[in-house]
Length: 195
Image 1 (cartoon, rainbow, N blue to C red):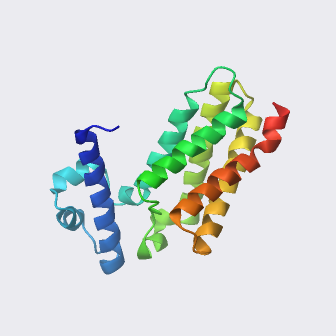
Image 2: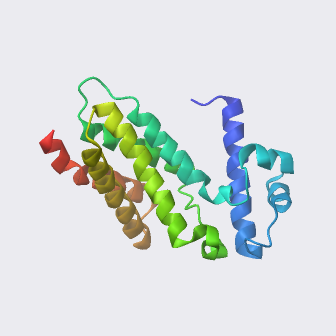
């Protein structure tokens, strides 16, 4: 259970992200200032900068937290735990982090049309995510790099496409979470047989 201080920090951070999302949608990304975001969240501009370095960082905060949860989980391999089970557990941690943050997508309104959200920027972020998870998995399980990348790619593909399909079908958050966890395990079945 998180301490009162830690819960307060999470609430403030989430309030900043929520305020930014609303303002970006209402006024546009470029027209929204950090001062306006802080005021809408009921905190000082200085407080904003204690959580985020730049205005654009607000848009990726949740995905960065989820990635860190996954990498941390990969560092907790149980004795004899198969790599596929460990990676599924890491995805569970990432999904739990996403759930705790309310499944905030991270990209709002017209902000997705800015250069910072270009296809190349998205590819770079995706490559970083795969690199971080595959490196942590390979280190935890003494796997070769190619196998670790294949496992992470299979799991990420299953989770992201399943989440997108479930949300577009109007599934509840709970249903979406359950479907993505199931999809991750299904994607890793072949790897589990090889281990």
